[in-house]
Amino acid sequence: MTAQRYSAPLSAAEQSEFVPFLHELLATATAVIQPLFMSGTVVDSKSDASPVTAADRGAEAAMRALIEQRYPAQGIVGEEYGVKAGAGYRWVLDPVDGTRAFITNCFLFGTLIALEREDGAGWRPVLGAIAHPVAGLTLIGHDSEARLHAADGSSRRVHVRACTQLRDATVLATTHWSTGEQRGGPAVERVIRAAKLYRTWGDCFGYFALATRGADLMLDPSLAHWDVAAIVPVVEGAGGRVTAWDGGDPLAQLSLIASAGPLHDEVLALLREGG
Amino acid sequence: MTAQRYSAPLSAAEQSEFVPFLHELLATATAVIQPLFMSGTVVDSKSDASPVTAADRGAEAAMRALIEQRYPAQGIVGEEYGVKAGAGYRWVLDPVDGTRAFITNCFLFGTLIALEREDGAGWRPVLGAIAHPVAGLTLIGHDSEARLHAADGSSRRVHVRACTQLRDATVLATTHWSTGEQRGGPAVERVIRAAKLYRTWGDCFGYFALATRGADLMLDPSLAHWDVAAIVPVVEGAGGRVTAWDGGDPLAQLSLIASAGPLHDEVLALLREGG
Image 1 (spheres, rainbow over the protein chains, first blue to last red):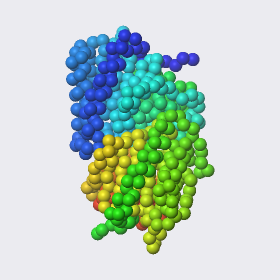
Image 2 (cartoon, each protein chain N blue to C red):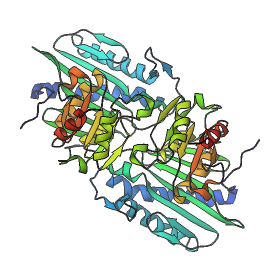
Image 3 (tube, one colour):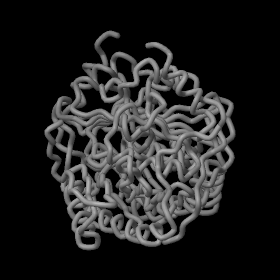
């Protein structure tokens, strides 16, 4: 059985055009973010009470300026500055995924970027990036491959592990339920108890670990479009499988189960059980 | 009231002698660990079922060789290769603190080193290091200061935040209780619920975050001598306070509450309440 895929194929012409530009965007974001990390930068609260800093705002503003200069007709969707309508393609930006990590001096925050293409059925991601500036490591993925880029300019293909059952799996899941941010509840507990190793490292790092053979399953019961759009091409490019919590389209539902593949159905079944 | 301190003072002569050697030890460990990170290195199980890799073993062996060459009369206590008796001073080594992080490709593992000095009452730590090789950041502390060293050779003094009450505090605590590794139980839940922000990032990173103003409280209900010995001089050097879970000597009890200082008694009181 071939699992449904949720990123659309990237053509060779698109790859030549947009992958170098994606690297430019990431370098632009990192140049803003890096000096603010561990600097004691002021933390403001957004309307949803989540924290935001000059790193989030400055990195997104710098990326938007670069996109508007290079591709003025294309759209932009950003966590901090909203939607700019456009045609054909749009760039989806989360300058600092894991702002709580960023303000806690934690190396696990990342920059997420997706390129989405308009087709008959709406927008689909064709290219995604998960960049961890402190580690100097960036994953870039599209339908047929995912590559890990190091700060020295080298890169290598990455692929998920061959993990076929949950009892052999390393499972990651965002944060801790006692904070009220994790809404998985008893269903997630069942998954965790069935796994070999569980850790709470979440945000985009969970998907980075999955794609680089550090983990086999990452769970996120609720997240934003700018997170899902970047993650889906990276995980699918690395040979993994993504679905929403109910097994459907994660871009429609904005929840995410990302796995090494063969164990995905076992996880879906456990999450479906009552409770 | 001046809080009890658990690291002993480092003399200027000791600082000149041993701080450069500590940097040598850290460089030696990093040279072994770095190439094995994200390499899919084999994971073995120790007798207590905890994981161990060639990074743990190789880094400790390399550090022990360097110590035996330079200071043949001094003692060594290492997580992987045990105790070598010695006089005057001994080096306490945890080559990879957070082996589960290391094998999950997580940037939060670290190398811990302490120098302990023998006095009438036994061994006391006088110098400690928490090094995060992936981030290229190392904290070195002793009784009167803690410094953050970057990969480019620069360094700066660090100091804990002025956090006076738990309701303003960012709290970190090791892992997740559902794994059975966290034995804090309801007492820790009380602390977490009273805090401003809670995250599960643990291992030595929690103390790194505390010393660099990323967090205000780190809790570890159970850990090993090689962890506590390195952490105590770093946190005290950064102006923070450490005690065991019951308020006493963390080197005697092998549990650790490390805080920005003024909120410490409030935390001890919450942990002492029944349950």
